[in-house]
Image 1 (tube, rainbow over the protein chains, first blue to last red):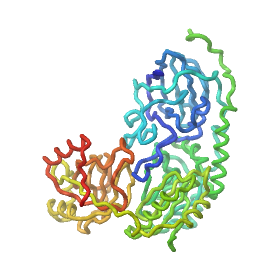
Image 2 (image 1 turned 180 degrees about the vertical axis):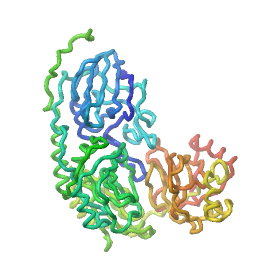
Image 3 (image 1 turned 90 degrees about the horizontal axis):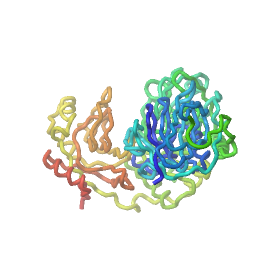
Image 4 (image 1 turned 90 degrees about the vertical axis):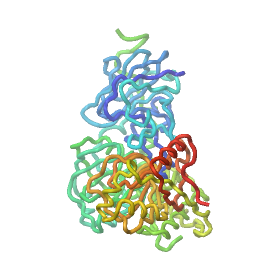
Length: 327
Length: 239
């Protein structure tokens, strides 16, 4: 038994996620997985975990506080969304790898930007596997702990004990804020829109009005349909820009259903989906068309940056934390 | 491949192979044939396929495969004619059209000007084709709803339906296998477990199969629900 971490306080929206539940979309099962895969993988890679298979906690703007209920220290890492993290009340930055000792507390609260942070442990959390994945899909109640958001008092079992490294700050430039347009690949139903509608989509700024793990709703100029807004249901992929009857973009995120019946003008590329996920209501974005091949090149470049996480670890600047608990 | 097949990108990680824009058994047969051909001749980098009424969405790993290379592979596939495929199975599913399992039956009956009994008879008297799963885990989309039962969607969604609800709206029918709020109407419920995430695959009914409903009363519902809870089969294969 490798012990566990106790959740002292789970803010709204905290869930267990791994890389996602794949292979079951043909039965209507949503993949789920992290909203910002770059930050999720970075936290895992900082610990030497498998980038996608190790389950971590996705922390949302409600924040989180955990207590180390183990008998030996545990390697943990966190990053993403510009959150502020404290160990036993002391600031430890927004992205770091730490050795959490028995009895210590770690807490996160959101900063001025960003929506999702990831909290990983050495070896990953050992919550139950459902249909090949530990990812939580709360709408269908599958995965994580009883298919729901984390609650105060939950016990998160660990699959390994130990801490194979020293403490470090994670300096991941790929997680920095970037206001470049979000790249999209047109289709599959771009022919449901007029040239004027496409110009409106690419020419204007859009403001995020609401969002959850399933979809982000944007406000901006109307994107008029040329051929109506009902299609016979077809497949849906992550990042689909759906335009429903209200003529406003609804972008499908990690908890998207596998099929849908609204025309999809374009898909936000994987390389930029994490950036979109970290937008807060009221913040704005623009869109830029790219080819599928350009999107693929951008993704490969982004993935190789993230894969180099181990080269972006630097000794912690704060006072050394040696031997036992601080006073 | 088929003359009118369209290859449409869904980002850099998915490709939609579209056979048409209608709900049509012949189109759905083409979708199934390609799905089976891809399963029999795996392409490295293909992660999973999602059959729908009229298209097959192929999700792939762009690290291993490009959209253009995938199109070429699909175009060179030998797609078996539908007649060479395994025969679709026929399923008999028990459904209770009595209170408290038929929450919206009388509302539908009033709206379309038929008796509640007639609505249940029509729903249970049809043979349905399974076109796709979608929307939520285990939601089975069926074609073949009698034209008399055409009713448009609710203007605003109703509260969550129970697992096993028989829903209709927009001239379509589906089995709702997971509780979820919906804009459709609930005519009855099956005690059968259609989708179970503890099993892999999580459902036995496949696209292309046919489904018929057998009316049961509330007492039979209770008995069969107990049987289902003990893992005994409640859905039957037709001989």
